[in-house]
Image (tube, rainbow, N blue to C red; front, side):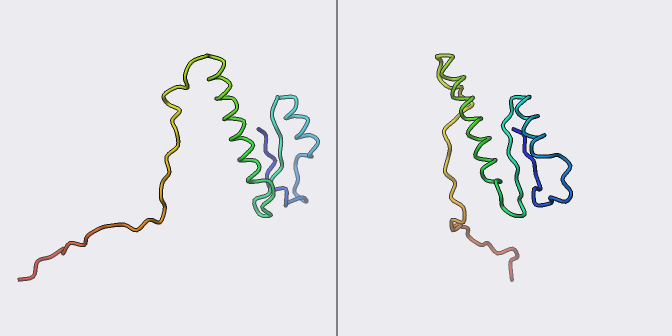
Length: 95
């Protein structure tokens, strides 16, 4: 995937959109332009590349007629912000 970043800085553009698209096409890549400042296409870029990775991994697994490698495991849910259960211990003894 080829990503053109900082599209919000149009006055500093070094590569034309058409040039980026044609280069990506020539190299067999997908192409997208993003701007984190303006929140344009950033999430879409991540979703696109993750979908492509998943598609490739799934296709390789299916074409080999073998089960998915053990290194590809099912996800695990992690609770963030869950209350911690810790007990405080006195650091010093008072006599």
